[in-house]
Amino acid sequence: MGLVQGVCGSCGKKIRRISPVPIAMTCDCYKICPICGSMMEPYVPDLDPKTYRNEDDPSWDPLDHAEKGEPLTIVAFVCRLHSPPFFSNRQPVEVQLE
Image (cartoon, rainbow, N blue to C red):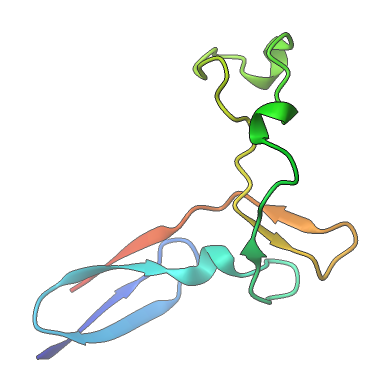
């Protein structure tokens, strides 16, 4: 068993683990609110995401890559400690530990 470490490309956090081989880890910086630093909770919309989409308005998908009927919302986490709440669409960052 040896010490493997890596640096997150998004937040700069150094991650260290004891492992016999190099591994990939997910940094949890995408779950932290950039305003207050608290952990955000998963966002669950009150309606079906398809409800928020206006397929007649071309400005929401200018390159026309989305398929019809595909959900438009991409929000993953919310911090309700603010008014209005902070909605985040940050994605997990994979860090290679070597």
